[in-house]
Amino acid sequence: MTAIGGHPVIAIRDIAKVYGEGDTEVRALRGVSLDIGAGEYVAIMGASGSGKSTLMHILGCLDVPTSGRYLLDGMDVSRLDDFALSVVRNRKIGFVFQSFNLIPRTSAFANVELPMVYANLPKAERQQRAQAALEKVGLGNRGDAFPNQLSGGQQQRVAVARAIATDPAMVLADEPTGALDSASTGEVLELFEGLNAEGRTVIVITHEPDVAARAGRLIRLRDGVVIEDTTHTAVVAGFGATEEAVL
Image 1: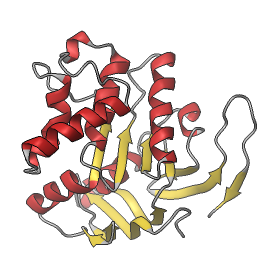
Image 2: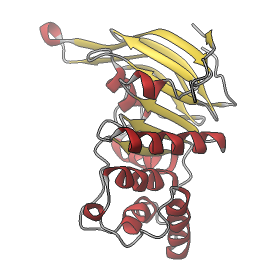
Image 3: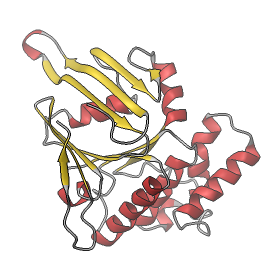
């Protein structure tokens, strides 16, 4: 498949993932190939057992494929060891999870700053980036707050700030609105749309059609293969969507 946006941030070719062997063998992915271009906003959907979570783990360098090739921003990460994968994750990918994954007894500012500490960025640069990221998500004056002093929506906005502070090649969000009410869901999705409008690549793993409809491209998996790959204009303010099949 050809990337819809700019140069491919993600290029995967014939990716397969097999767990177990013999009678316990499970083929989670069965030869998936796709490109995701710079500046795309993509939703990946699929029912339980579709391979959606496995694909997310591979795209996020949290796991490696059994076979096939994966280029992330031009780097072949298919066969990297655990340490090398951790370096790539820190430098190339900003993660947003359903459960926020904030450190409870650490301020919002320190949570945002943490990935840059691991990246050994100078203190002054870390602080400048952390503050700028918090301001971008509308929490520039809440840096001293601890997670338990913030609403669920605010915690997820801190998580988005943490994800973008390192200026990653892409933001990868796994069910980012699953723990939020409708109002907070709207706020977080507006953040993703704003990041995408600035040219950032955003990939959202979701089972919610309303969330997927806000993306510009939908990739749907079933039984470890891509069964749908369409681009569309997001449904916003009641206007209809147009679609163009890629597969």
